[in-house]
Length: 146
Length: 202
Image 1: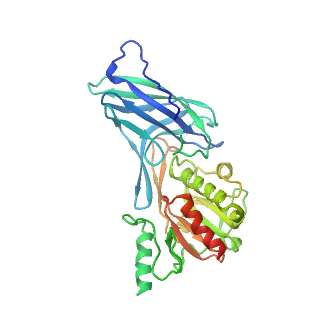
Image 2: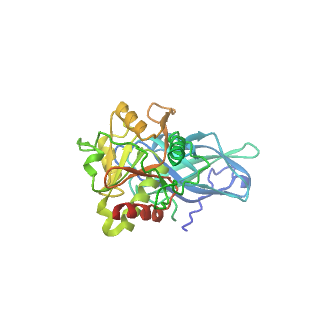
Image 3: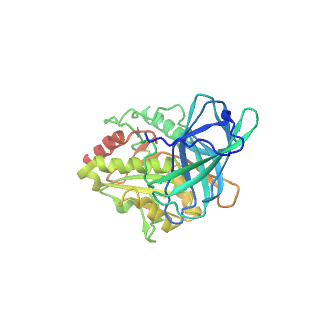
């Protein structure tokens, strides 16, 4: 597994507790005219944190989504926040959570590096931003293989 | 009675209420044990008239002689739809020499955003032989009903950022155009290949 540990920025007050590791971030490439796609990654944190928002310059609307299967029906819904318990790893992968990039401003081509900012809130309410660069995999990428 | 049990199961599945069903096994009465759900004789989605990305009207009848797999989805689906298309790409590879006797059809449930151009490019990324089909919103609803497939629009923050919930079964028709299998989304490609090879070779 290729590991790009994109740990925090937000210079001035880097609170150690808010460190969020982002492993293997990727997005699914799109075809021309396709308005949305998903971003996937693994999140790890030493302390309990919550991802409370996401932004990207390539999309007009960015949401955290959860996909659930209910009796053979795929249901997708935005979630307000995603908890990353301290010491645990939370997977954003097909069949579960993803960052949904909607109202795309341009086609996402294979190999493109897509900037995504995750807004992370620590237990004490302090917020930091984590910059993630997600590489675009082919439209037909296998979401389960690394 | 066999028929009663079968229709009871079919109506259950028809309501997409297959929760709790492990999605495997066959209905009493079928000789062959499939990995997918045997719906032989159920009369599902007998036919449709939808357009391919080139504007041609396509029907199930024109594929007689081939095994046909139909499923519903939309290109802005980040998750289940590409995973399903990828599974059938792998099935095609596993079928080897028999792959030209399988036709995969992807019916969009989001004709509003899935233009012909988007659909054509999208499915071509998985396999050149796959055909995307599109109808008006009304035509789509009629076809989905015939397949007992369900879908609903979930409004988003902007008029174009909505998403779709939808049922995820694929439907397999034999070479004579008879509905035979309801394929759950979580069957492995190898299990699907095994079932489809049986339909191709019998």
